[in-house]
Amino acid sequence: MSHDKALYPIREIARLTGVSPITLRAWERRYDLIEPVRTDSGHRLYNQAHIDYINEAVELTKQGVAISKVKAILAEREQQRLSTLDRDENSFVDELINASRACNDSKIKELLFQLYAEFWHEQIQQVLFKVTFALTEEQSAVRLLWQNSVLPLLFSRVYQANKQARLSQSNKIMLIGAGQADLDGQLIQAIISNEVVAIGAKPVIGRRLKSSPSTDKLLLNELKALHCGIVLVYAVTDASNQLSEWLKWAKNHQSIEVLFVSEEQIELTNQPVNFATFRFADGIVLN
Image (cartoon, rainbow, N blue to C red; front, top):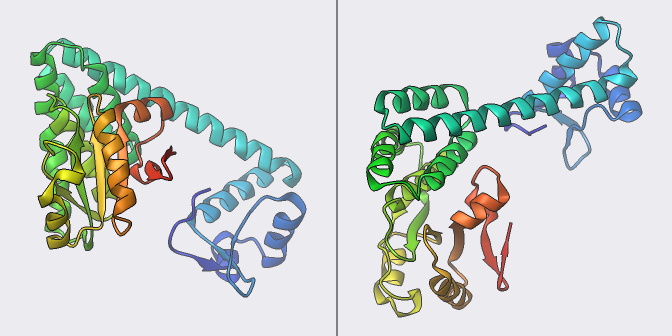
């Protein structure tokens, strides 16, 4: 269960769910059913995910299910839910690829509207990445149609976040493309920008470096002027030489965190792209 920000004491959970504090403690100790957050003093705190979980458990017990069997049933339900999401996600990927290859602009827009209405941003990002990479070998007309359908949506989300002042001005992340310029580069940049926006940070679009970061005299000045302590390097095409240079540069500038996202990593992990999981450390790319 994911932990939401709002936390409630056990007495409030008892009021909201109708399950007494004594029963909640018993479910935790005897059946390992709930794992509350603990304060430094040992008090239990619960979030919305816990409340939903407890309510599901209550419904099962009302149906005659023994409390000792509830955890296994709810775990199976969660697995089925995730499997359904995976199937739906892959279905969207296939349909968007087919619509792009058929140059069916109206179908692409219809599917994108459904995608944004039905999925969380992590799933949306992954679908967009998968379709983009699947179309890299297609004719430029197909790729341009896909980009022209997606980019307005992505730019609009970044613009609205800026307009509503939801982005932290003190938490800026500069995006810099490594490797050769590519037709898909702007779209990859826009997708990653939306990931930055989703965590409340402000994306800053950096220049594509013509050489290595160590020989670019303007880079440090830009970062200092913008008060930007994080650089996210994304690579659409092979950029192994530049990435090695970035690793050396990061070790010489410890005050600046360097993150890295590449097509290969996204495909291999098969996870929603969360750039914070890709970082240089001691010469190893961790995930």
